[in-house]
Structure formats: C-alpha cells, structure tokens
Amino acid sequence: MKYRLTEGIAALLAFLPALALAQDTGLLAYGGRVVPPMTPPVLPGDWEAAAPGQPKRQWDRALPFFAQRVIDKGADLPNPYDVGVSLYYGREQRILSSLQVGFNGAPLQQLDFVQFPKSTINNQSPQLQIGAWVFPFMNVYGILGQTKGGGDIDIAIQGSGLAQFLIGPNACAGGVLPICQRTITGTAHANYHGNTYGAGMTLAGAYQKIFFAVPITYVTSDLTISDTLGRTWNIAPRVGWNQHLENGGVLTWYAGGTYLKSDMNITGTFSFDTSGNPGLPNTTTMQYSIHVEPRDRWNYLAGVNWTIDKHWGVVTEVGFGNSRSDAIVTGFFRF
Image 1 (cartoon, rainbow, N blue to C red):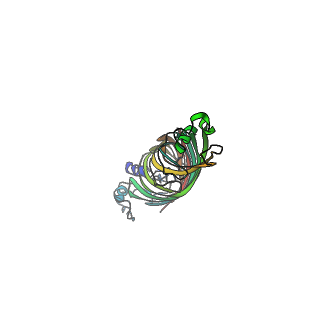
Image 2: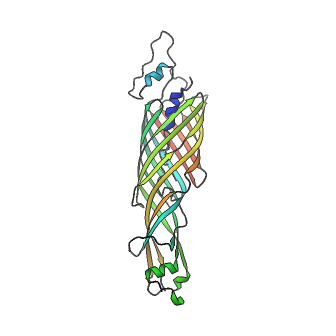
C-alpha cells in the first residue's frame, strides 16, 4: 500500500529533534534539537481497503481529526499518540556580544579593554517527548528534559586598560606597574546544568517511497550559568526514502538541514594574579555577563528512522557542517 500525500505532510512537522538535542557556548545550553516521530510507512500485515460490498473500516480513535476520510480512501494511518525518549550530544561555537564586566564586586559595565575571543561548549541532554497526530498531516508534541555541559571561554584583558580603570588614568605613567606591559589571558571554565521545556509540531508527507518532513520546535532552557531563560527556535526540513526490509519493518534514510536561532545571557567569574602591582590586590576577580548566539544558523543533517512495527520505532540522526556538530538517538512507542 502506498503512502498518501496527506499522510506525508503530517510526518513533516512532527520531526523537530527533541533532545536537543543542540550545540560554542553551544547552548551554553540546550540547542533545541529534537527528533519528532515520523509517519511510519505501511508495514506487511497492515489492513487493506475494504473490497467492494464489504463494510468499511471505522477509525476508533479521537485523533487525528478527519482520519475517517483518509481511511475511506484506502490509506492507513499511524497510531495517533506517541511517547519518545532521546539522548543528545552537541558541540558548537557561538558568537559573544553585549559584553559587560565588573571587577572585585563593582557593577557590570561595558569596557573595551576586555575581550572574549572565542568559546566552545559541549552539552548533553536526556529528554522525554509526548505527542499526538492532530491531523493526518500534523503531529504536535511537548518536550521535557535536562541538560548539562561544560566548556571554555577565552578571555583577554589589556593590562594598561585594567590599571587605568582600577587605579586612575595616570596609573601607567613612568612604567612603574608591570601589568601595564602585559595582556592577561586565560580561560574561564563554564560548567552548567538545568531544565529544558518546549513544544513543536511536524508537518509531514510521503509519495510512494519518498518521505518529506518539516519539524519546528521552540525550547526554553533554565540554566545555572545564565541570569535569563535561554530561548531556541529549531527548524529542520528533510527528505528521505523508504526501504522495506525482507524480515519486516521499514528503514527511512533521510538528509536535510537544521536552522537554529537561539539567544541567552551567561554569567560567571574569572580570577587572575595581579600581585606585584602597587594599588592592585594580589588577586583580582572579574564578573561578566555575555550574550551568546550561534556562530552559524544552518548546518546539515543525516539520519535513519527504523519503523519496527506499528508501535515501536528508533531514530538516529547526526548534524554536521559549519561550526556545529551533534548526534541524537530517539526511541518511540506509538499507541
């Protein structure tokens, strides 16, 4: 039995990666990547359209809406409800902007003698996803998970600017302070954890053995290194091909791209040695607040969905290219 176009469009929106499943300070947090359930292909043993003169099959579920119209045309539908569990790992570079710093407890402000050249963070997240096919071409889902990770934020502080800021405009006159000839460099280590919440939908469809989907997901992250909620939009269009296996089940091989738009602020401290400089303490502590967003909005993806039967499925997906890489594995139960 061949897929109907209406079946195909439904799988498309449900497929936004749920683990975020994301990505340099790469989330300094969770990137919002999830793998929504795709419309499972028709499997051996699935029902066929009623022969002429025979009673039509009746759809006995509340969802999806308009399911009976699809059934009456001779097409089957997936079980309408799904629960998925995902595990995600990501690595990404991010752009840092709106830098604000303060020294030894002073209020934060913008200072041009402090730079944050680069940051890279790894993150991982287990996640639970619950969804339903509201229409034969649309799946909606909610996401609940936890994320944790860590990474490095490079810091460069011009010594002369620091001395003039903390001591006075003439601090470097006469070459008395050694720090005036230095650029202080170091790395702030950012470790974090927190909860993620989100929702999304997938529009999906298929024609014969060709599958296409467009998942859209919105995720918020409440992380220990941020003074604001992280917000992420993820759109991941894909197209694939269904391969029927001799011993049952269907493999759907697919490829596409992932668009990631996220923003958040991260906060932290960085301490460094300033001993041997009259007027400065032996150790100076800098507080910082930084706005972070992806260095590249797009990267590529490739994956395979194994529809084992009407109830069980497994999806493995990798993202690659530009400044972001990630991998996610998701198991689904449909009922």
